[in-house]
Structures are given as C-alpha cells and as structure tokens.
Length: 168
Image (cartoon, rainbow, N blue to C red):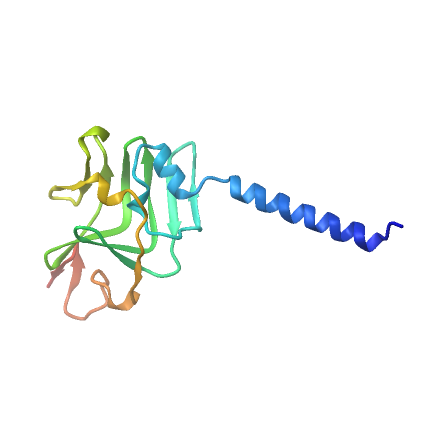
C-alpha cells in the first residue's frame, strides 16, 4: 500500500541528495586557484562565501572575521578580499597585507612566473617579495583578529595611515 506521506518523504530525501550533489560539484575557491596555476594555500582554510566571474577573472572572498595566517611572514586577510585571477597570477589584489619586521604592506598582486622554479612573488608596492612556493601548498588556519585592533584603520586622531605608515 502506497501512502501519500511516504511518497512525499522519499521525494524530499531524493531532492536533498540532488541539492547536495549539485553543491558539491561547484568548484571551490581553492579549485579556481589550482586551475589557474596557483597554490591552494594563498587563502586561509574554510572559505565558503566567494564569487568568481569566469569571464573576467574577478573574484571576491567574504570572511566572517578578519584573520592572520603565519607563513614566513604574517599575512592579514580583511573581511573582503578581491582581485583579478588569471593564469599564474592575481592582480589588483585588495584586502591582504603582509607584515615585514614591524610594518604592514598591502599586497597588490601575487604571481608565479615559472612553477618549476619553486618561487612565488608578492607585489608589496616598492618591491616584490619572493617566497618558496611550498609554503602555500595547503590552506592555513587563520587566527581571527578584532577589526578595530588592526594596523590599517584610519580612525586615530593623530593622522591617517597610508600603506601601513602614519601620515601626520
């Protein structure tokens, strides 16, 4: 005997599995990096809220909270990270800063010229910082930081900050 309720339950279960299957087939932001010849560890673990325009390469990542990840140097990721993704590079990058000694510099771009060289370059404006590509093989844990405590807020009364430097 076939009950209408059991048919509805079976249909709901089948639909749920279909939705999960469709969701699982969507490439992650890490898949987009990999397919563009970039290491998956450029962005922190657990990114689920992102957008990539396949035609233009524009992407935006939305984090629930700004965070820091430790490589050779410290990297800071803002709430929103965006840029232009193309093969072997990310251009027009915003929302990522790198600590060098006691100063923070905005990372404007990232590139891998020759993958076999084992090197990756971060454009921090005045110079390109060179790192071992192996540092970025896997996404890292990212420690949440209070957005009000970070280095590049312009809300102090003494001056404004430009590129991590205070202008009085």
